[in-house]
Each structure stands twice: as C-alpha cells, then as structure tokens.
Image (cartoon, rainbow, N blue to C red; front, side):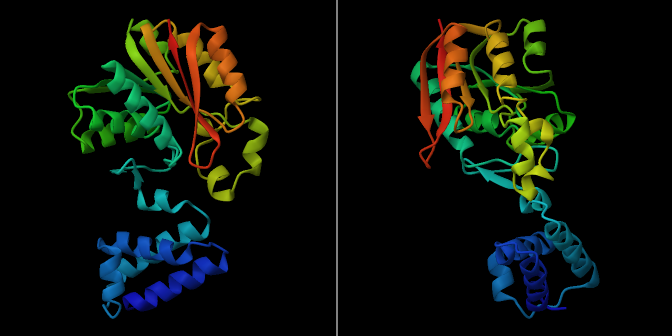
Length: 283
C-alpha cells in the first residue's frame, strides 16, 4: 500500500469513531511508524510501504480507534518547549501545568532558590523543565508509582540531568522526612479530581489515564492536606510551596495553607481565566 492509501484508511477508521482529530492523529501515527515527519508524508504520498510498516500502522490505529490518547501511542508529549517520553501509567502533560512551571521559575529566580522537590512527579516534566531552565538547580523527584519513577528516570537521562537530580520512590514526602531532606521550594501537581467526577470524564481520560494520578479522594483535597502538613517538616525557613489546583478549589486550598502557617498565599489563573496555581511561603 502507498502512503496516501494508508492515510485514507486511517482517516476512515477514526472518523467512523467520531474522533475529531482523525486526520492529524492518522498522520502522526504514520509518522511514528516510518520515523519521518509530517512534511515527508504529505510530499511522498505515492511511496510504497513494506508489509511490516503497514501492519504496525493498523495496529496503532486500532489503539486510537479504541480512544487511547494519541500521545500514549506516540510515547511522546511536548511541554514547555521540550519533548518528553511518556507512556500509559503516567498523566499526559497539559498546557495548564505550564502556569505552575512559570510561577515556580519566577519564584526561584527572584529569591535565588536552589533546592527543589517535585512531589507526585509523574513523568517528571515540572522538575525537569525547571532544571533545564536553571543550570544550578538541585531537584529531588518523588512518586509512589513505579511507572512514574521509570518514566522520570528516562526523561532525566534524555536531558542529561543525572548529576543534579535524584528520582526516588516515596509515598508523598515520607521518604524526604525519613532522610531529613530540606528544600527551598516544593512543587506539585497532585491528583485533585473528586472521586465521583472521574466517571464523567472523557473516555480517553477515564479509561486510559491512571486513576491514581487523577483521583484526589471524596472532596479532591486528600493530597493537598497531606503534602501541606508533611511539607512543614522539609521546607527551609521562608520556603515556598506551589500547587496546581482544580478550577473550583481556590478557597479550600488557600484555607488549608493559611491554617498550616503559610503566608502570602496567592492564586494565579490559567489562560482560560480559571484558578489554576496556588503558592505560599512558610515563615
């Protein structure tokens, strides 16, 4: 089969499943299979592909047909201008999380902070992005998921950061407390969706993204409570904490921080005008 025939087949299959991005997804999947960019595909439509490539293309199209997110199929996602390895078992990076990185970047530069903790690190995109932008930043990543630890380590190696970072398995900050670590700043995008809401999410999210990375308990605040309480044992004086939050969680998380002794609590909105990031300092 030629490239143009494969593209048409992919378009027809995905369009029949009401996948709005059927054209782009098909092109990206074929690009992965033949290891060439989209421009090559568009300008070489008459190129004949061998049997192995054709079979691999239809195998991956079948995953997308079942609503698996295309980024899991490609095992790749862009974030903050960097290309990260991801796979099923870690959360897919969202543009909204870039707000968290930008706020952390500003805080680190303004206050010359050097020791950072990324807890619930997932694929490591937050801490790695910050380490890429700040050359002498020291970062420790924590996650309870073995897949998250594996993926973060792969991304650390991709960006040659092994000398400045550690990736450790931990139930939130338990390991940091045991090791008597101290940090200038803690960043986290913890699970924050209410348990009852999970079933209402889109198929490609609820059926494929890890429940452990989505569900924040009955009220969505379980992880914030624990991280805030545990952070007081590992933050240096005047240390900062920065969270990504759900659009409707500003008041509750602000109160959790202030009751726990954090001052200068500020909420930052995302590009859609929703509350997205909260930060505070422990005096």
